[in-house]
Length: 160
Image (cartoon, rainbow, N blue to C red):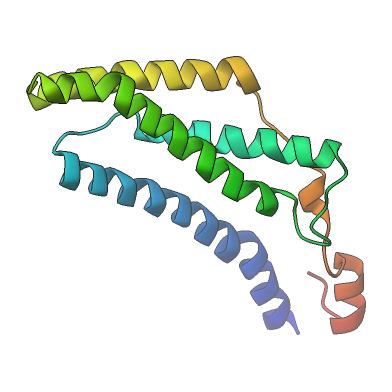
């Protein structure tokens, strides 16, 4: 029984958080790799593009929660993710049209595009901090579970 308790604790406090965090890092690394492979310059705004996309998803989640929209036992953010994707895509396309297009037409050197991407990074970062703030954001919505910890302990007889 102690081995099973240790396995449950390891899964809840190590495996699942590690998979979630590793997935975030892999998504960022994959995006940077694709950008460099296609555009041939290092886009320093990529991380802040991910952050502003998260901000869009958070804002839509708050809006859906204010309207009373729910996704049953699952977090409402799952409904907001497609909206965040669309809004982020529109922002990136608009940024490409308004900023990067000029430098591509000028046939600017890649180092110039890197410097421009740093400017875009600062703009995205500033917008995110201005709109949503630099502090942590907590959602009570994601705390709903299909089964509670107490029920799990009762059913399985485990301590963890």
